[in-house]
Length: 377
Image 1: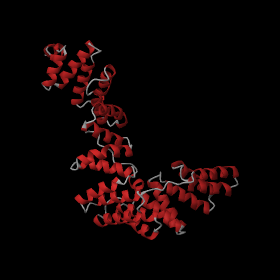
Image 2: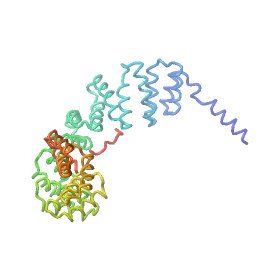
Image 3: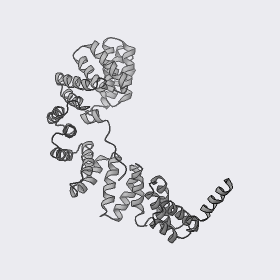
Image 4: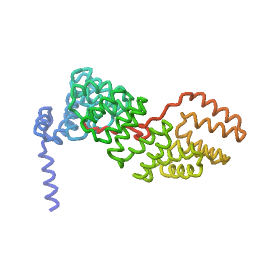
């Protein structure tokens, strides 16, 4: 029985069309018949017989892409491109394959080349804009996507990416885009939050607060909505309102690390060191990379003359964000208090270097990173 199985398998191989598909016409016929695996194997044979045939490599890459194998298609397209940079469509196909893999930075050059070759290509225009967003080049993404979105007002997904690009670029076009979303769904808490984030990024704090209030009213148990409102109040030094909002977030998520940290900061500002330490410790246990919590713990320990603990907390805060001058100032004061004048002077010099502190905004605190782009076009 085993012998007959071996003979049968050997016969299947010998009769396989790919063994006889030795010309581009044979490979093309298999492709047209929808026999993608056989067509890919056939194009491979063609390229082995003629390794200078750029069109054969391009066709092979196209079949691999249709098979859902962009990882294999990329080097094949690159070979075709090396053989003939002017081969029609090769730059676009390579850009599409890189985009599908989520290699947004690598997709930019071929997509730009495709667009230069065909300025009217809507596909190249759109994929270039999406790749710029995926590569976090938000201002460039805005410039690329805005005219495309204006020509296609019904494309909700495209307008959403444009809105996020505007938001992360702190461009006023975010207001128009998120207001468009609100017009379509006036009760959407997420749309109110996003519009609030955009307003905050543009320095329009009171208007941002109103949007977050609307979001809280629409969905008081939506994750992060109370925290966002609290953070906006905190930024404006309205600590009683901030405290109420942060406590509202903890009612939804008792382990919300950032709400705990900011409540601890408010307690510290109110000279309630015991409550502050409890809240701040709980925050860093849940989320060890909260700079504010470590900085505040360092300040409290320093006031209590617990210098080793203060130094450890402040150094941790500096490591998490070395660009914040307040932590360097506190560390300088600690070194002064412990008699290390040289180290203190170095920290105070850093404070002078960092003379302009970049103000945090609600977008960074709530989101941390822009929404990921779905790589498939």
